[in-house]
Amino acid sequence: MKTVIVDSYALNPGDLSWEGFESIGDVQIFKSTSDEELIARCKDADAILTNKVPFTRKTMEQLPNLKYIGVTATGTNIIDVKAANEMGIIVTNVPEYSTDGVAESVFAFILGWSRNTFQHSQMVKDGGWQASQCFSAPRFPIMELKGKRIGIVGMGHIGAKTASIAEAFGMEVVYTSRSQKEEAEERGYKRITLKELLSTSDFITLHVPLSKETENMIGEKELRMMKKSSFLINTARGALIDEEALYNALKDGTISGAGLDVMREEPPKKPSPLFTLPQCVITPHIAWSAKETRQRLMNAALENLVSFMIGTPKNIVTQ
Image (tube, rainbow, N blue to C red):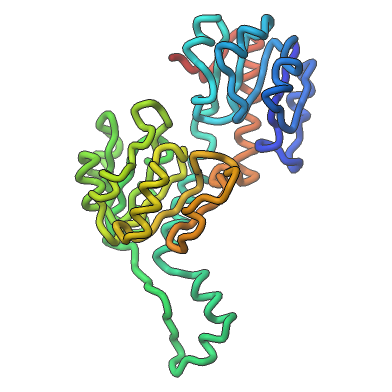
């Protein structure tokens, strides 16, 4: 069986070993693959692993041997899953691998915002502390997290982990989800409507997959529901937020700040207006990318592939 890994670099920029994959047969590994290269590289493949290279119905129809697509991520919006199912191609993903890393990144944004650590550090280096008449020289707002309300949009694995960290900080946790989560209710997390969550939360963090229903779920109307002091965090998918509306909301003070690890276009082809706003903190889609997280992802992706090869596929994604 021939396996092609079409975009290995995101998963393994060189600090992990491909030995496990190389031991199971004919495996070709490409750091990245352009649209023009995709068919030629995959034309004889029985199995394909992809992180962000999309597979449409038209693409899959040109790959006669293709029986398996392993997405080396949790989200599968890059795959036409309906078409794959109809063509008998098994699609798998890797759930839960990034739970800890992404939840920790949410709090990197929250703590960075609430304590202004880096701004104070720069102030010290610029001589501001030396010029102070007092031993303590706060120049930027600082707040405690205890008692603040965090609104979690989507109480899946990452949302639940984020909630547990928030609870440890003494924060009040509320959430909105398509269904009530028994474990969340047992822990005292209150399920409320999105409107109530937006209008009452100090911190709002998004943890839902990208779909037709969730695209631009945070737009001008939703941003105007939020408190002027609120801080919006997105470590899920960039297209959940209307970026033009967010820029306007930040610029005119509708909300206080935002922390984004994802954007609609990745990498951006040109600077976004959001780049000009100091109250918008942006990182380059790295919440999932700690070495430990990527090793866990690689192990799970290999396990998915081997399970398929022996006839017991797991983590199958359906329409």
